[in-house]
Length: 311
Image (tube, rainbow, N blue to C red; front, side):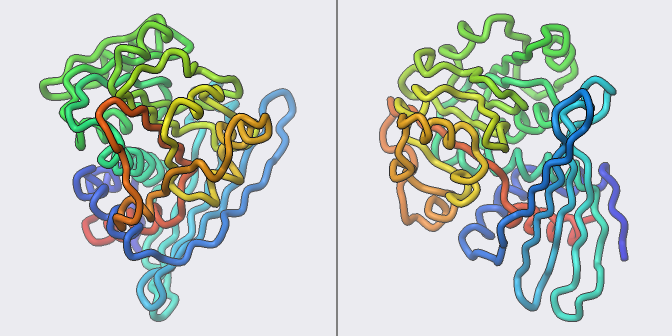
């Protein structure tokens, strides 16, 4: 069995190739049962989450990701997300590879947002606002830059110093990067707004959005979390990675539905329908689009296959 460390995972998963693999697996499909999500209380800090995410393509590959999400790790200067991915040979059941889980998750999560953006953001999108300064932020920036002609990136975080550090650390060709200090001022000026936080209160107000924007919501993977208010959903054409995940785990949607502010029937499409051409993405230039992802085991399986082929 091969052991693939984080550096090799990142090297294998360039975003152009990975976005293509995700597009292919959503088109072709694979078996992905509902994830197992367990909450583990930790005294004096938010609950830890344990996630088990299986998926398989019969006769080819079987895989499962085991992940812990520990919000309190921020105070320990540790990543919130840790875990491993175990890939098996689908013909004989033998373990093929043990892959670094956090890097696989970071790359595939960012690539899923980029895949959605390819259908939903304006093709001429040039300014990106990154809301959040965690481990996923630089990967999201790079992924969006891989599918759109981004020329300017602004970084906003609750801690201004972290936003400044991330802005200085990002080195992108022909892209200017700076920290944003006022979120309400930064949002209207962006063509794409991408959020990756563990917030339990809305960060993005729908009143701030302007025609033609694309809002990419990546954090808030539990019902009690949210990054947007109800007005965002009401003003935008809403898309998700998978309906099942969005309606059981995405706090942005679940809380709006409970408040009577959003109807699940108003979800325009998921990534299966977009990639297969069954539903349209952006319909006109001035439309506001919103993509809410909760992650899918299909994405992990596609990324793991690419890692094994290349690492």
